Length: 441
Ligand SMILES: *Cc1c(COP(=O)(O)O)cnc(C)c1O
Image (cartoon, rainbow, N blue to C red; front, side, top):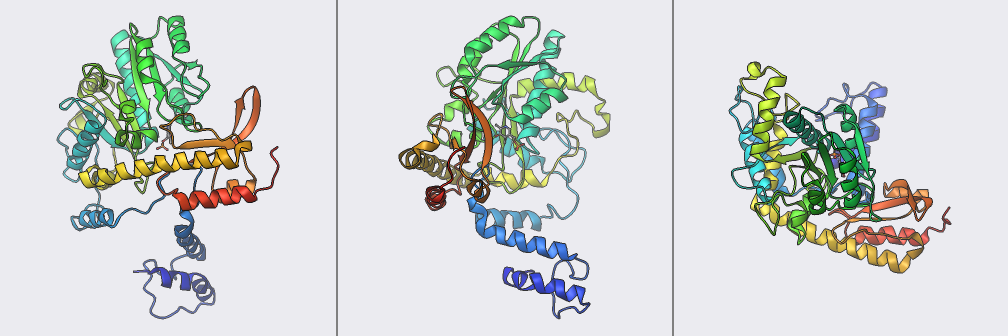
């Protein structure tokens, strides 16, 4: 094994050794030095440095905490069982028997049922799978909506969303060949339900595929699902929830109702049709993955139509997913996050993360009000403000964007307070802001 100490010690020396043709003794590199290019050694040394600086990443919604020993023990258990040591593949519907034995459909099914329960899906009426990413989950939600609506009406739907929706929605809308109906936003960046009503009335001959965002990418706005549902009354529609970031933590807070499938006041009422959540954002799963959850009744209706689109004979059943081969390692690993103790930890992370967001907002309001810090609602972990100097943008990897606020187009940046952004990191950030003498442009 390559220890960190050995690694740093050999980083530069290894290159010299290779180029001078003499190899150091007793090397136990996993990749033999003679076979590794000097660039690889350098790049790995940089990666090792990153481990000590990763928590300074504040501009993108990624939980940079290193996972617990328990997670790595679980990984070890999976490895010992052979998972990830030879070809595994979750092709097909995780709720159906697979034609091949080398899958982890059992873990995938169980974790979907557990998360389905968390999002208030009715027991016995839950379907889903672990996708490759939030975008992949959005793709399945939009494709399912398109298929169901076309099946019910014979007409392709139009796609309704706002300019604050994630850019993946624009790409997927294009991929699915749907016409866009752009809905106006409220001052906080959320979808304007009255404009939705108006636009639905303007487009009476097409069903509506509505994509609502719970936690918009730059501003952290929440589209009001209940008011959208109200506007949709009497129309043939499919409402997909893009809850890539907020969908991870809201279920563990007093605001769980925002992402709940069932209405809290009337459990017989469905608030939406499908939901997408990224696993690598709040949960901190170490590589991209996504939850896609819908009802079993929606899935069955979809599957009937889907089976007419392609010939399922080869894998013995209709796969239920657009992508054929699917990762089997991720569901087995992500299963860890569905356990009661992991969920307790997530609840703790959600609580402290929102407390830290409140703290950052208060501190910025009292010390940097000239940056116009804004947090658009009390469920958001995102604070945006006038763009500080490039030095700060670079050090904290801040995302920047031009926003038109009060008829003035200015450049803004945001901090997404993720679980690794503790008081210490936030204090360092504000100390830097304090030293930042660059006047606003
Ligand atoms: C991050 C994000 C996505 C894309 O998710 P990936 O997992 O990165 O593909 C989609 N929508 C919203 C609102 C997001 O924040």
